Image 1: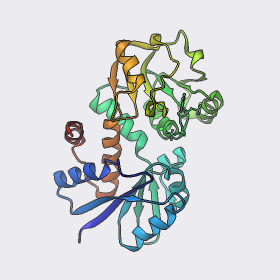
Image 2: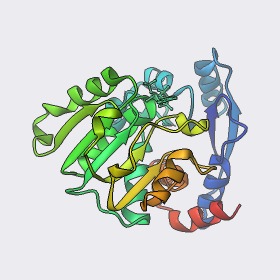
Image 3: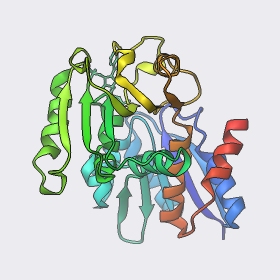
Length: 274
Ligand code: ATR
């Protein structure tokens, strides 16, 4: 019998996940199907239970349900616990397993596809919302020399930094929470835009001087050149959008479900050509 999977979100029409998982399944000869499900804003758990009753094996979860999915899972893997959000559900006979592959997807894209090691690097994370929270621990697990978080509402950046700065395993990392204006005079090797500002044409109030020589400027958005990407390109940085992260987080979810690692680079290439 063909194993069934889905992605739940609202909206969901734009989701590329079915095409990505179909490509993985074809590559690795997995007998599975994967579809989009529009869950009502007040009907996420009902939609999940319907999938379970219909024999689905798992589901990805996207905006705005990642936090609710965390509460619905009966067992949480460490990345999901740390992020307080779930993007991958696996349905077992007596429990619902929740995991989060977003951060790992970002780190894999930067290190394996863009060939930028994060170890001993100066990282700046722009934004302190759900998307930034989801990648915080995987970034610091990669052992940068420093991690700065800048956000319009500085108190959210402070809360994120406070969570990690005293943990014994991260004592060798220099942490700092900032407003955008505070960043003057600092330089970074990796600058990651995790704000939602790229959805509009608003530019973040950051200086070109932030981008060190050889800097990678990574926007977690995909599908368009954001003002952040345009600024970084102009300032001489290497620029990447979030398509690679999207495919890599899907590859991690696919691996969790199927136990097989797809060739994600080939699928990134294919998705870019669409
Ligand atoms: P997401 O799940 O996409 O992270 P979110 O939790 O609402 O969504 O977070 C949005 C992020 O984009 C926040 O860091 C937000 O900054 P604030 O916390 O100060 O609101 C940031 N953001 C959104 N619009 C912005 C703007 N016009 N200028 C600067 N930052 C913006």
